[in-house]
Amino acid sequence: MNIPLLQSKAWEKLQQDLSENTFIHQGTDYQFLAILKNTPLGNYLYVPYGPVATDKTSFKAAIKALTILADQTESIFIRVEPQNPGFISSFPKNTHKSTDLNPKETWILDLKNGELKDKLPERLVRYHKNAAKNGLTITTSHNPEDIKYLLKLQTSLAKKKGINTFSKEYLKTELAQPFATLYLVEYEKEIVAAGLVFDDKTTRYNLQGAQSEKGRKLHATGILTIQLIYDAKEKGLKTFDFWGIAPENAPKNHPWAGFTGFKKTFKGEQINYAGTYDIVVKPVKYRLYQLTRKINRLLRKV
Image 1 (cartoon, helix red, strand yellow):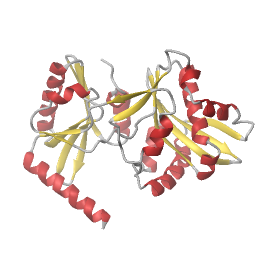
Image 2 (cartoon, helix red, strand yellow):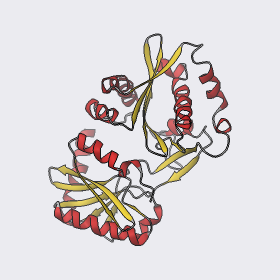
Image 3 (cartoon, rainbow, N blue to C red):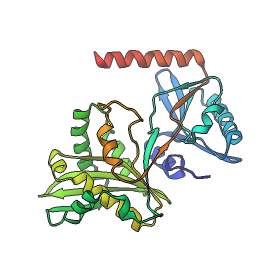
Image 4 (tube, rainbow, N blue to C red):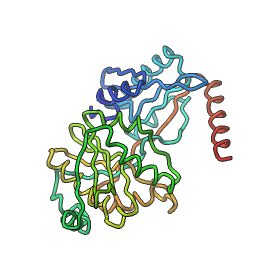
């Protein structure tokens, strides 16, 4: 089985460092990492990009094991995100579509087959080649304190786009993990772009990134992305995951519209996952949970 990063023991270590309760279980032809989440109304289990299974039979076995775990942890529901869309037909009847948490669609660049230079935007390769001459430098860091540079850029972007960002402590804990690297682009002693990437045995995941207005004018994100890909290739990784694109036929004002257009300038491939679903264990409490969420969203808008 191909175990995605978010279902790995390394990801479990990150969750434990974030003080989360985790359960990792391996059965015959299936595996899952479940994170116990707490709400004022009760618990639920979250299985990011999982469970992982070889076929529909083993997927059903994984759901059965998760249901037992849900009973043991007194969970209201189980939130799952199987990457294989073919497993949707194997969900139990008490399953409801939820808002997608991790990207349902992503853009993947193959680093092993074919000439890499033919897959990269010529314009960005040229900008990257001239970066040092134009005063831009790229460095890497594993110091959690340096996450402040990424957070500052993300906070500014989040205000403009109306999107959420992670807390400083969350990002610091991510950077403290062995699989994480922070890239910083500097111009005239100012950080104009930053990116946080995660690497497993096969893939580099481009999870977090942002640039300033000055960085945008200097094409900093494009230059940085080329460097991320070059380094992943040199490291011997097989794929570069751009981590999320807007759905097909998404409106032009979709928060990811600009990001998606940029990512698709690279000659990659769109990969579609199943999305996020809730398997309900306690129907009455689940309905109350959903109602409470709707009320909270309305109050935040007011």
